[in-house]
Amino acid sequence: MSGGPIEVVERDFGELALNMGPQHPSTHGVLRLILHLSGETVIKAIPVIGYLHRGVEKLSEHLAYDQLAPVYERDDYLAPTANSNAYVLAVERLGAIAVPRRAQWLRAFVSEWQRVSSHLVWLGTLGLDLGGALGGGTTLYMYCFREREKILDFLEELTGTRFHTNFNLVGGVRYDLDAAMVAKSNALAASVEAALPEFWAMSGGNPIFQERTRNVGVISKDLAMGVGITGPTLRASGINYDVRKAAPYDAYDELPFEVVTRTAGDAEARFQVRMEEIGVSLKLVRTIANGLPTGPIFTRKPLKNPKATKLPKGEVYAAVESPRGELGFHIVSDGSARPYRLKINAPSFKNLQIVPHILPGGLVADVVAILGSLDPVLGDVDR
Amino acid sequence: MPAPEIVATLETRFSATPFALGVEIPKDSLLTALRTLRDAHGYRYYVLGTGTEGETSFEVTHAVRNLESNDTLFVKVSVPKDAPEVDSIAFVYAGAEWQEREIWDLFGVTFKAHPDLRRILMPDDYPGHPLRKSFAMDTPWGYRKAEAQAPEAGS
Image (cartoon, rainbow over all chains, first blue to last red):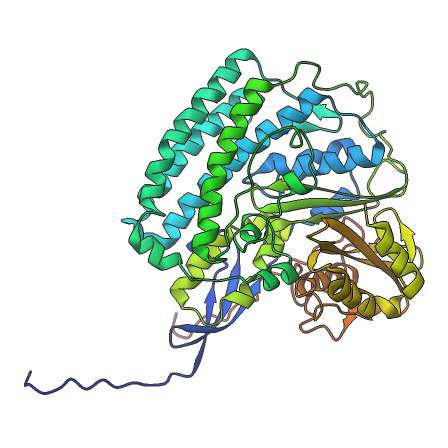
């Protein structure tokens, strides 16, 4: 090739519509994004959901109150007990059903363990999404899943199931914790805690990771409130709202813990909030395991016919702080043994709604980082 | 529990009727009421939107929250079944956009001046509204086989 300057030809390809998903490794399930691109810049993003719609709300109208709790554990499948916890809270509130204090502590205990395990899945998959930046990404993913596996083993020993624990009952919980399990829980908390600095060094402490997430997908306070995003995503935008503090349920009014917030509102802030929440939850499981009050875990009369429990006429809303945010159940009862109408206020649905607002202006590579930082679970979005 | 003074204000201004979680207001004042709640009373956080089928009408419920006073208020309107249409509040609360699409999709209530009223959970060409009580549980869900493709010439 002879000397002389290299001529760069710039061509305008116009607007390009790119389908991302529904089968795409970085869309965390079956989410489809229609991206309108100009070169590599996103000018418009249209999320398409519903691929995992199972009609859980319709199904609810045909099952009895005592049969329903396990159904919702299949919604947000990374933190199953949070779903059933919110449901039983709503039923207990409407039916004025008492829950023993020990059961309330146990609910918080399992919820916090599942928050840790859910955040570990999020961290691992975020590592996969950002891929090359983290030495292939798979390393972080495998490390996170190694720790999560231990938590699932622990939950299996406690409840008989690794995942959909079916732990919550209307009026109490199903399984109790003994001294040996308390010791196991404490040892497990120590082992997960010991792995955290390593995770941090591989992700948040990595300059390439910071470059990929800092000032990416910034959500302002006003936008956050108008769209109603929730959970760590909301708290990363500088709004201190956590259902555990704002409307305490279970044992959270007795438990000391701090709400993690950030003000930047970008993907890095959301990452930092979740990372710190893992630590907070590990402290909480220790506090709960060591301070568990004595007493029964279920005080309702044994049910002869689980289909006969009737709730008074009325309307109720109860919410919990799931790993993804405020997860609420709005139940309309007509006085029969089945809900007349049940609405699940799903945190992933609300968080995903921010996507068309924050993607335009960014690059295609940022889309993946932003989606990862929102942590949507499509089972929760589509219900 | 909703704040009593807000409920009282809505009662006098919009002739609202209180219920356990909030207030029921006349359909025509929905937009003004929510705008007032957002701008004058600090209810800037959108919590949820849901629908319920009644005897002769659909109830459309929006829940909004004041994060400073930590107060959640449910605002309900009743929409007659023979003309199921109500104002969209998507321009007041951006979060209502998807929730209203969901109510349209599952109940068939249309929202006036909604920016993008399409189905959200069901397929775009789905004929029914599954959460209506008249929609039976065993309704075939409309699986369509892909149309047989003509074999390529020469194969």
